[in-house]
Length: 332
Image 1 (spheres, one colour):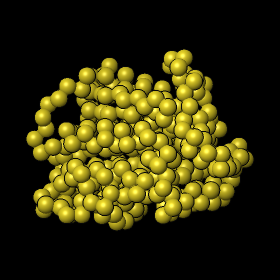
Image 2 (tube, one colour; image 1 turned 90 degrees about the vertical axis):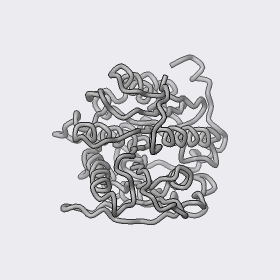
Image 3 (cartoon, one colour; image 1 turned 90 degrees about the horizontal axis):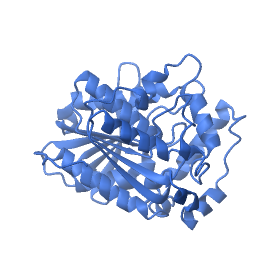
């Protein structure tokens, strides 16, 4: 972290958005209050007026809710497809939204519909179980992995090419995508790319020990109080940290990664450190930093100009990795 980070400021729009949002008292929040708070946030994120901030879907894509039926549960997914597909099997991008204990796949329509229309591809965004006092992070991680397995196993029904698969996610969703890429390697399921946007890759006791937690520390879109609450929900007593901590995993032989890091974000060093660990393990990894951008910037194109640049970087990376005949390209 350099000294310049201390002087970075996010846009006025982001600061105003933060000023009108009122966080609950994370220390005393009950399970019922958390559910109500998350539902209210999700309703706002899914509303038409929110498009002025979160961006409007690409008109070249269709968006539908579907269900992935598993033996023990049903997982809703938000499916983005090109409006006029050519008829051939398309690449698959399994996406996981951020938020952890709140958030919805609908908040990511601006980017996901663009990828569906422009690559083109089928983008399946996982409406995973949200973290709660009785729902640890492992449940959300299982949802991401199980959706990937199910869709690839039923490739013909979904109209996807199982040989051209990528995973992507933001924040907590970035963690889930990273673990999914690791599980895919261990299971012999081929994944060509992983994209991690401001990922939280270390929910363990060392989560708050990274330099970016104190510089810039609390940022408009993600405070340390929120992170502490996330940590308590993610790993309750008796939970296995290793199962949900990609930064502490074996990172060899994974899908090439694109890691996008906004610099005004307590989690900035999670992303930086993870990219370094991937590279050290021999997994190709591109790190792209976005100075002055806050946490969750990819979902705020109406307020954060860097969101469009990030989306273009993601689209280029996916296009290269998911091409029918990938063209080798240096990742250095």
